[in-house]
Image 1 (spheres, rainbow, N blue to C red):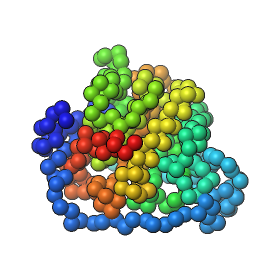
Image 2: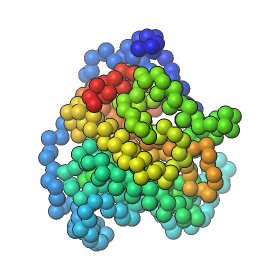
Image 3: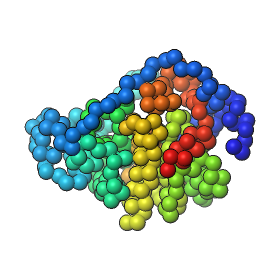
Image 4: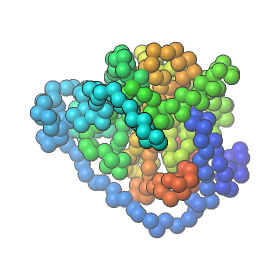
Length: 340
């Protein structure tokens, strides 16, 4: 480790993308755990489940029948959080402020195989998922009331996933969500001052130091960010600045899929379990502006801390103060890197 103080003493690390700090307490990683232990799921899922509303040819809650799809299947969410017919209104009553929000929410099934996750899929199969993400980003962004497209996945019951079938979601909406707005601002400030990509310059430093890098290929680097909050948080980002995933070449899409495959597979190896996480892609808004300051990236936020049964909870100080972690980014990166 290049800076032993970072591995031995409490300190703060700055998130350049959000402008916020995270408290790191490496000495706490040695404390005994007497808190909650999650149960390991030993369920072996079938390739087809007649009771699953996402499996091919099955009937969903709204009565629609899924096609006999062979790879990726996308449909409008039957329980969408955002409505595309919401009327335009505002609430401006003293300190009570609100406004309408329109949107379109979709579900994307990664595979017809009920038993799989991204970690079980081949690179060419994941590439089809990437291509579907690209298509949806473009198609949803064409709507004049859609200014942002959020692609994400919740994997595992621990992360609130209600159906184990391999799938993710795409929520598109009129305004920028909170986390995206923070990153939009920080990247814009840096770009206007330095005429270069904030994340691109950061990645070059990480590639030189190599301390937090887990995997890289010709187009992508996967690493644990210096400011990571979750114990085994990972970011995948293109080495060269791209505003959004539509700028990926055909080979670039395959290399992105390879990075996803590598990370999800080593996650499963880490604690010998189907590793839960929430993942999402942050990329340029679809607001008809240039957005030359944007450098898109994908983040994985897994909640497991010490084993398949010990979870990282965001409580107490994390709720009322700021995010906090015990295991350092450097230690976590080495543990994941050693599993490749």
